[in-house]
Image 1 (tube, rainbow, N blue to C red):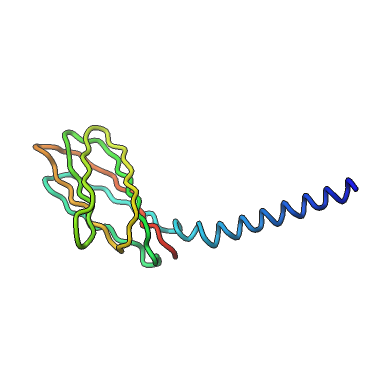
Image 2: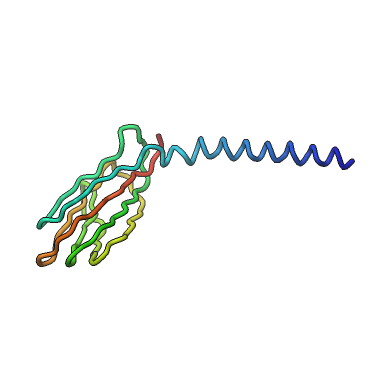
Length: 132
């Protein structure tokens, strides 16, 4: 009886692990696969940046933008799609900011405006979340 119970536990565990592995590869991994892109931005006055999805991505449903870097002053970032400005972000000092939101467009515009004589360099890591 004890031996039979051990076999059932092992077989059940292997089935659960197999279902988890299949689900991860089928549903979760395609959302993030090969989607991360990077760029550096040197702040000089007003900057407009166009972020685009990778060619392999389809059915975009979200966006993540990680913004890091030192700033001397204050900047404003407006996140927009091709039709309208959606969000406004003010950043200053040693920036470590993550913007996450639902997104259904293939591109994203960042309009960066410096206040006064603000300077600095930002490092952007961004990804559009969608299926492959």
